[in-house]
Image (cartoon, rainbow, N blue to C red; front, side, top):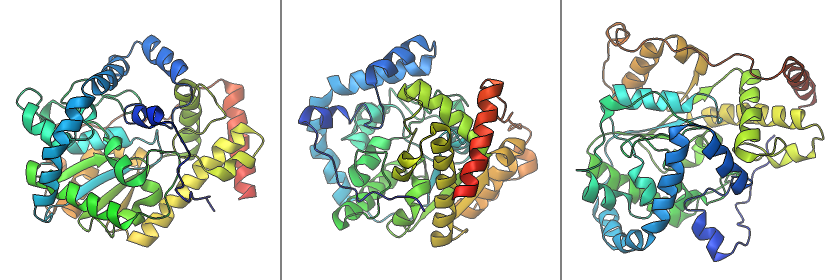
Amino acid sequence: MPTRSNNVPQKESKLKQWLHTYVPSNYGNIWKLTRNLITSGKREAWLAMIYAFLGIVVTPLDWFLQIFEKRQYHNAPPSQLPQIFVCGPPRSGTTLVAQVLMKHLPVYYFNNLTSIFPRSPITALKLFSFFVPNDNQKIQFRSFYGRTSRPSSPNDALYLWDRWIGKDRRKVPNSIKEGDSKDMIEFFNAVEAYAKKPLVNKNNSLSTYASLIAPILKNAFFICLDRDPLFLAQSHLIARRFINANEKVSYGVDFDASQDIGNYFESLCYDIITHKNLIQEQQQRIGADRFMVVPYEDFCANPAKIVSDIARQCLNIAIDARELSEVLKPFRAANRIKLSESEFLELSKAFQNIKLAV
């Protein structure tokens, strides 16, 4: 069974706590990450750094706008529309699925502007939406480790979840405080009052604790991605090397028990299997009607059918899958070997060893 955090925050300086609003605490060596982002040649990577810098620059304005932001939370009526949260292990296809849903369903999403104003996102959207309007039809199915380019492009908005779950995204919470639950409800009420549409938001980690959120957000549905475990492990290893600059450090949630496994290939496989076990646990607790597990490979093969199913189950609207398939073509699943032959073989063997051990 996975080890869960008691959600006890570690002592950090005020400066680090402030910086973690813009630079997540789960990143390892920030200087190596910065170097990797700059040399990646990806526009999305460069703009992610620019948005983080802009967020730091406008912090005083963001603090001031909180005065108006909090009023909206208190005055918003109860939510009546569904929220759709896309989740799953990192590198399981969640970004693609979220973008497809945002583009082809009548929904609202958080854009990159909110990352510049993490404390006052709704107020900032009201002030600047004329210059940075959401446009579902212009959403492009591209990203770089979940990052998108244009100010109006979708953003995971994990900095919003940090308010209620905590800023250490490596840990799985075992409870949510009553005050945080109330604040969460008020926030999503205010989002709906502003957008007047159902919300689609991506948060990978919800696949590990959605059962804590479901009783709080009673209109919430969870679309959880599941990917072939061997190729998911390969993708995690590549991400560990690029994002964390350390192949021994978990990418995403850090399951403490994996630290006791000497071989980092086996530690990696343990993380993947633990993710899968937690997904099953969440579905059992919430029910398949609200927590839908979608194989990544199935989505790529027939995205129109999956979108149609989600529209019917979550939004109670009918979309003709055959008609949608005329504009929404199948995707090529990213399940191909990217490691050396010897490393991929070692990873395969590690999976067999961990399956026998757990």
